[in-house]
Amino acid sequence: MRALRSIWRLVVALPVTGMILGSGCVEESRTPVACMERAVFGDPSQSAYILPYPVGDSYRLMQGYCYPEGGHRNQLAYDFETPVGTQIIASRSGTVMKVRSDLPDDGKQPESGQHNHIMIRHDDGTVAFYAHLQQHSVLVKVGDNVFQGQPIAESGNSGNTQGMPHLHFGIYEGWPAREGFDVPVNFRNAEGTLDKRRGLRPGGYFRALPY
Image (cartoon, rainbow, N blue to C red; front, side):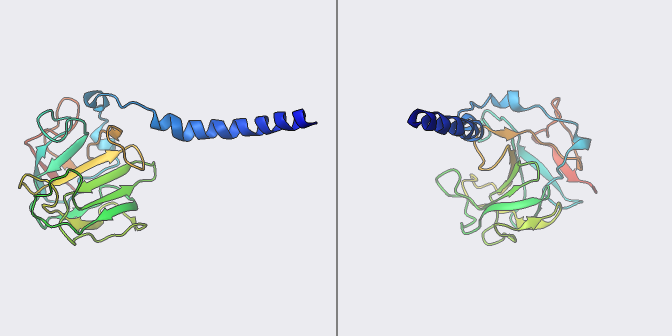
């Protein structure tokens, strides 16, 4: 009888162990592929995203994705040259997961990641990251549901910006966001020149069209 009970405990435990391995340990053990291998963009007209600033505004793209000489060596992210005080809107509807808004707009934080920001999770699990926001300008809080196009903050100069105010924008696979596990994004309302991969071309100006 004792042997039978031991076998039964093992049978019950196996499916639970499988779920833990399948949902946690295996995910954590994934190795990210190279940035340019991840940079496979879809048709911008079918994109779920709009530019993260209001219709009619136009800003220069300072830095694109996978840029080897900048801070995006391993990031599918964009830096838009937005002056301090520029209105920032939600690129896609979702739920606010994380905010920070207490850092000054001096562009002198010595450590990367020390900037005002918002992270919003979408209905497919992806997470949008809006960074270098203006101090005390964040209009949303954790748990808020925001709609596409809703004002969420103002662009600033917080963090290590090298003295160049801008909005850093990128999309991660899921929450919590992990470096190397981001996804390529373009925008269905962006008027401007794309590169051969259909990502935004650095140096170009991108105007937000009605969507």
